[in-house]
Image 1: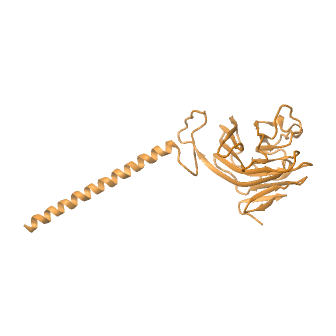
Image 2: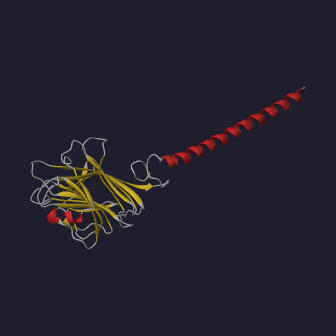
Image 3: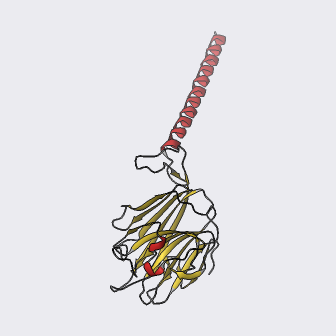
Length: 271
């Protein structure tokens, strides 16, 4: 099988009617999925439905979302190569050596192409930001992760795993710089312990910030490339339709006046 938009490899299995399974619940697997076409938007949002599941009380290792300058290449960091350039967002389900941190743990790293991932300490030396996500595994519904990026300004990660339609802010970090052209990807890895790691849906959106103002939460007002316009856009649209209605009303009134004038003239001619 081939896809026009995605490349995949390793242990990845495509079930178009259900999911893309990066790893099954088998030891020593690694699978990946990477876009063929890069993200070129200045500001963007990626929303992914995923599922991490399995049996037993011992499991690992986890999965990752990537926004990197180069396409996927298999390696030792959740199935992908080390020393990457760009964003790695890790859903780490197995605790190696991070005292005081509750696992599963979601962590972001911005790689410079030279720095090695601190695997022995679960990325502690590389962490940009992160949050504990206890309960993200074996949920009753697919977990959602939403990653929002404004170029050189802000990176935000939100998760939905506790309740449906309830987003939990994982972190928001200012002054984050990612490659201007980057490829979106996903990967997962198992070791001696294992889990099923599934991708169900992926949506990407361009974002626009027409007002440049900040809202009450301190984040930029924006509208998505798809969906309902922002308030700033709604104002412009409202004025446009008001003008169109006024113009059409003027045409109707003028037409009625002309018709009445012609009618009166004909009535005078008859008498």
